[in-house]
Length: 190
Image (cartoon, rainbow, N blue to C red; front, side, top):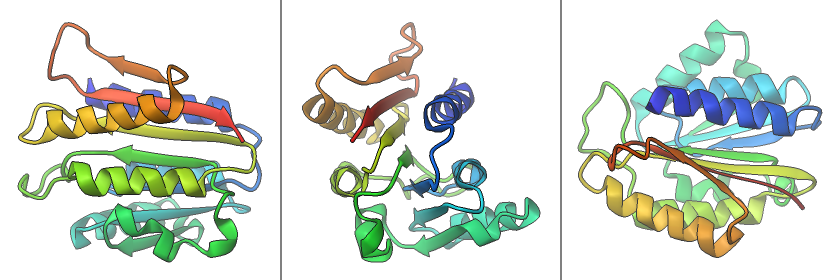
């Protein structure tokens, strides 16, 4: 179900942010680069994507994917934790970011001991809220609960969404599976 939730997040963003120009976006967890590529396509020539990951392999994968699709000029990728995004996004874009994506857990096909953690993820979510603004905005977090620490991180992220948006966000998961991935998506206008 994780893959279809990625596609669902992309579909929600495409529909909600259609026509937003310029679109500035953040991929808070670059991973294999699929969200980065999607956001770069959505941002187009007038926008920009800022991607963050702590693993050089993730940055290299995303860079290759962007180059293969002739979108490398639309994205800036940073080898650092997502909690530091405000250190790298130009200050003049604070309050002008239209979309922030989180795909939490670990880099697929790599060492599963390097995972996102609740404390840095919450710091990154708080930073995201300071960066989002200037019209239609979206915050998306795909949480994987089936690995060590995954349930704890999901609960922290869900709490953040509840505290920040009340009931004004969507949650998608396989209700029959208690460890299925969960997509949390908040759409709002600033």
